[in-house]
Image (cartoon, rainbow, N blue to C red; front, side, top):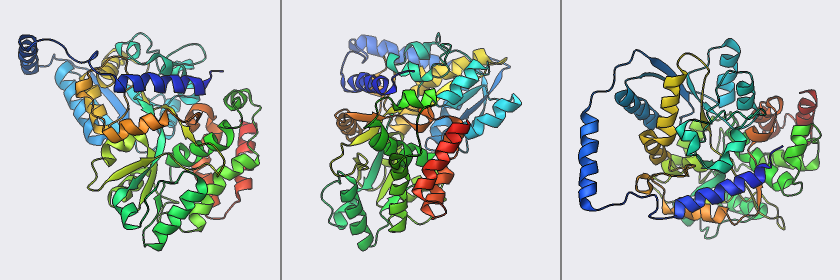
Length: 437
């Protein structure tokens, strides 16, 4: 079993060094060379796209970068002459792809998460090995294991490095008299109470889809499990892990406490991630529990946005964070796979990558790229630097849990929040699903 924690820390260190380095990947040369390149680029842009009768279907998880996705599809067609039928995935990757895989109707290009679901698609011959394409060769090497199936097929190319965090509205914090970021759970609850007393909804989360698994479960698992048991990933894979424990119950209990005390934005229990994002941008909540992939969008808000490590640790516990790969890109094994590979290279390694990255402000997972074209705020760079100093890291739910378990997480959080079941009963549900997988 792969040592995901070590892999992710190596990936983070490698990517961070690429983010912070200067010069070596930038375009070099005198003004004549620069003018020549501009002339060449201008000439290339005027060329007609090669004609092609091929149309590829592309389905991507793009609710936070839809305009960029559509622009990439258009630019790709302009460059290669290959038409694109583009569809934004309406929900989670696995929920969207599973019925299509069963029916043999997978899109030619698709978003894919690291972990067992994508690996199974590759092992069953539904998606192809991408190890030899240009985008894969330029991908940070230490990210590849989580996109590699049991037989060694690289089924996905990473979209970037990711972590989850809590964004907060600096203006609201200032108005409420909050001058210090909370560093543990008790301090976080105090901040929530202060915000509530001042008339603000403290926190927006989304329990209606997999967003709650990215945030509350994965962060809680990092704090409660990864910090105590370095072999937990190996045990989950071997079928020997125990979910029916006080540690697992506490992961659910935190969300119950937030809801019971009125610290969650109204509607959070049923909210989908798109609603969550809009609520924070519209200043309906002082804080938003989301991924670093939202930095590009949130940092353009008309108010100051801060970023904090989720203070899910109890007093005396070390802080722990989720660290993993962002959703990647995969290609179906079908008649259009050559054209689909061109698209993946374009969005993950060529000009389309910069359109994608600039929209999201994400952390690149490429070995070589043009630093001048990468858009990343100073706040994000500073947060990544803080991230690297945290010793305890945990994996995302989709990287380690079997589908039978992770598919039930959102509903289980909803049931705990509404007192339909207790946190302890939630832990037992996971254990029963795990045992029966």
